[in-house]
Length: 237
Image (cartoon, rainbow, N blue to C red; front, top):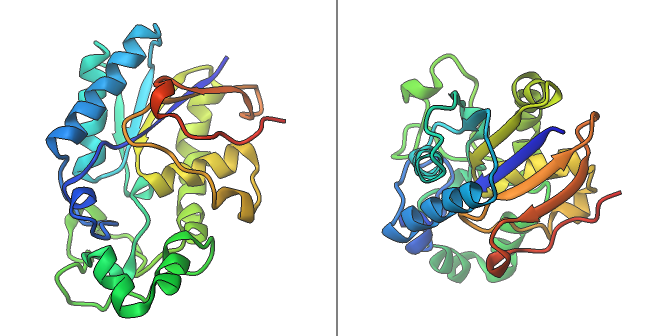
């Protein structure tokens, strides 16, 4: 039976500073490293054998994958990195403190930018500190200047269909170590959730979500390996 493990990166430095991170390449905190390692220990304790791993091109997700695979005793599995698994692009909010932004624009407006399905933040102005156009990780790619969860899914879905889904259909156990919003996009795809239902889905940091899939890659069962830090899961069926 195909098995998908979704692992959100551990706490990052900008998570700790309460800043909009998006595509900015910040590292894990010591707590984030511990969360990633604990995730790998839980995978090992569950006896799960991973065949392949996917991650984004951002350090916090890559290191989460490495730390988890190390703790699971499975550092040898093939790994693939791609920007299409990056976190949602926060546009003009990138780098800003969330509380300061709420004070400036109003808590209701910030809630819309953060939690609505299809309303993105203002675009990121070109040429600034967080303009990723010159970053060689994205050479030759057409990049967004802001994203909602809807447009995050638009870039995740083709990658899922072309690269990840075929491995699962071949019966492999696949780890995807990525970000809150790119993982939520995958959850929306496999569960077939409505635009409204996905808004309430949260994925905790560093807690492996193990989803067993049928031949059509629809969930048969799902569980977090750390019950104490689990979040509510969508209904199956």
